[in-house]
Every structure is written in structure tokens, then in C-alpha cells.
Length: 216
Image (spheres, rainbow, N blue to C red):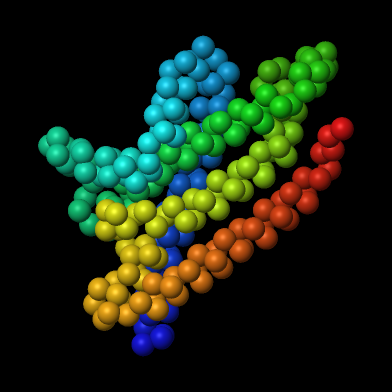
């Protein structure tokens, strides 16, 4: 039974990892785009959107995105596992891109204005200044808060169970329903701890690598 549970949870972990990777793949660049938009006149509209997304539960957003289109007569998502994962990734991407945008904005605004002006004196374009000066220093500033959000994302993947996506928590809970076993549900905690532990090590290494940026 132990190996059956282990293999089942491993399959659920694969889905959890898939949701995690796809969310980061889409949310990080989208968050950066939104952050840049927050520095333009479009900030008024974007701030309202961010306020709504950050002010409502991710679980509610996931349910709205998955169920509401069908209730309105639009079959956006297929009823199979792929459709449920796709809906989860869309909901998570929208949610986390808003959180990432606020962090990115703070990182961009934290770069001293004098460095931007120095780039102008050197004849650099705005694009060159952003990618060669602002972006590099922004990354150093946003790594700590970003690491917290990304670790939170690992645990939030369990919300996919709400729309019956077969992720890690769903796999563990299935043994409680079918066999009345509770220990597999607690066993899932080890998978999450391992996942978070690996990410923590990775972020610690990244922070050490970025130590060449020193702030007075």
C-alpha cells in the first residue's frame, strides 16, 4: 500500500509541478509588462484591476474562470484533465502576475534615478538603460519578495482540487475517500516540504550570486 500511495502521489506531484512551471512561465513576463504599465497613464485602470485581483480569493477566481464561461454558454474549457489544468494555469497566471507586477514596480522605482541619468549622459537609449541598468538592479531587489510569492504558489496549487484537477492534494485525499486512510493526506506534506526546500536552496544560491550589487 505504501508504494501504491507513493506512486499515486508522485503522479499528483507531476501535475502540481506542471501548474507551477506554467504559471511562472506566463505570470513573470506578464507581471513585468503590467509593472511597466503602472509607470504610465494606464496605471489608473491597472491599479483597479490589481485591486480586484488582490482583494478577492484565488479560489473564487479559479471557480469563476472555470465555471462561469460554461454557465454563459461558452465552452472554453474541455471537461477532461487538460481543460482543468488549463483553467487553473489561466487563473493562477492572472492572479500572480498582479502580485508580481507590484513587486516589479517597487524594484524598478527603487533603482536610483541618478543611474538612469548617467545612462542618458552616455548616450544610451531608454531600452538600453532599462535592460543594462534598471533590470539588472531590479532583479537584485525583487528576489527576496519574489521568492516568498513563488513558494506560496507551490502551496496554492492545491486549490486546483476545487475544480477536480488531479494534483497532489487531490491524490492524497482520494485514499481517504476510497479506503478511509488518513496518513496519505499527511504524507502529501512531505512532497510539499521537499518542493519548498529545493526552491529555498535555489533562491539562496541566486541571492548569493547577486551579491555583487552592493547598496549603501
